[in-house]
Length: 92
Image (cartoon, rainbow, N blue to C red; front, side, top):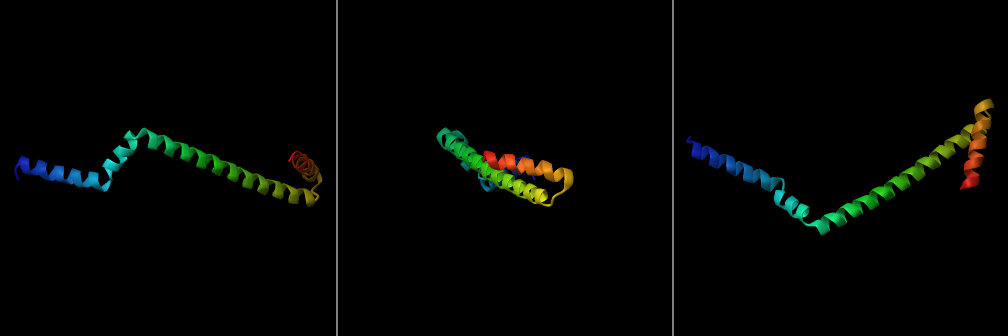
């Protein structure tokens, strides 16, 4: 095969790969600053909501576990945890 034919085949392969990865759609997205700004804003809002919900659920689970440990009447840990749970419940 001649160099010319090899280059043509390689270029065809590159064109097919670019179509597969949808490079044109990505470039349109990157150059459209309004769409990208809205997308990044929405991404940030969703991430913030996820963190808030996750932290709330995790905090509730920790309080529930601490309450059960405090009710088990363990000598030193029980008193400390009972006081901690009381403080948390009073501040909610």
